[in-house]
Image (cartoon, rainbow, N blue to C red):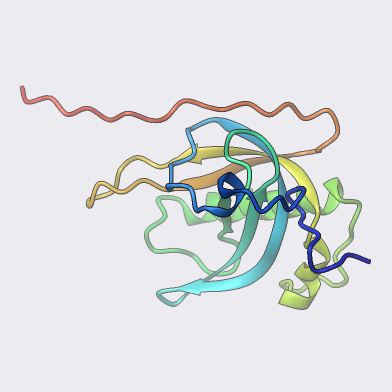
Length: 167
């Protein structure tokens, strides 16, 4: 049993460096880190249903940072170039995660939040990617790979730098 003062990220020191919020930094493209599943839930955005895995990095330069993984397996997203391929890849990712953590789905229907709760607090190695800047110039991180934590090597990637030239 854990107590109130126990933290998954390590010793609670009360030091300024551990207590003060760090400035937000984009996690560089290609970063590999161990991470814990904070939640795995059914989600929805603008009427499109999907699954979201929320990860918390547990080591490396970005320890404590959060990154989400969308699995578009429930509804076709009209913004997707190839929704069939996206769904197929997402279904394979879910199956990979079930296998990785030695779990089995309880039924053949779409998973409920209760079904997905078995993934909470599981640790895996993940690869983090950066999107290209959108119309507003914002970039986002996303999880592209999930690996067994045993023997996983963490490393910081390289930020995507976009330059514009006038020709």
